[in-house]
Image (tube, rainbow, N blue to C red; front, side, top):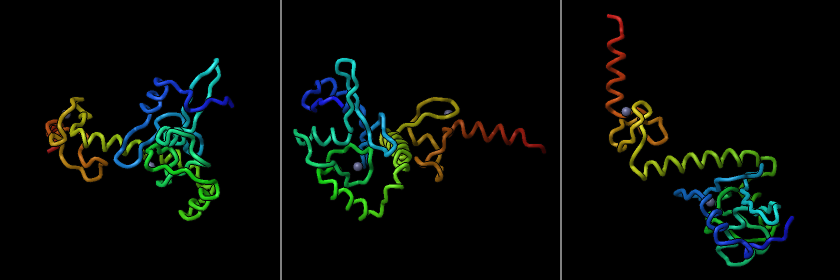
Length: 179
Ligand SMILES: [Zn+2]
Ligand SMILES: [Zn+2]
């Protein structure tokens, strides 16, 4: 392990770190390498050696302007989250107590990486709803969401074909139907 301090990171490295955090409506998810527990890693190179920082800890360090004491805890219990107001510094035993309080046990962790993927997908959908546009799966044109019919089962509540493609599609189906 290289003893590289956060204060040794360059402005460009910090900008690269921050660009890998997806700002969702809730958690801000690390969009890079994660370990099997779902915690993110940010890597830099010094003398051709890779030095890695835990992404959530780095986020808290940048907020505090110093190394956090003890372990960095998530108030949201979401390992890849790097939203600094979801992070607290605390002792390892406090962290274990948090885990017990939330009914989590060590064996439950492999789900964290999956949870991170789900959260990333949710953030993408939320961003799409916020942007008010969506790309039609048939004509491939990006159109306003109101050009898509409602579909309750879809995560964004909209059909994947735009209204005019939907019309063309149902017309072609009814034409093909035997009399
Ligand atoms: Zn969070
Ligand atoms: Zn279309």
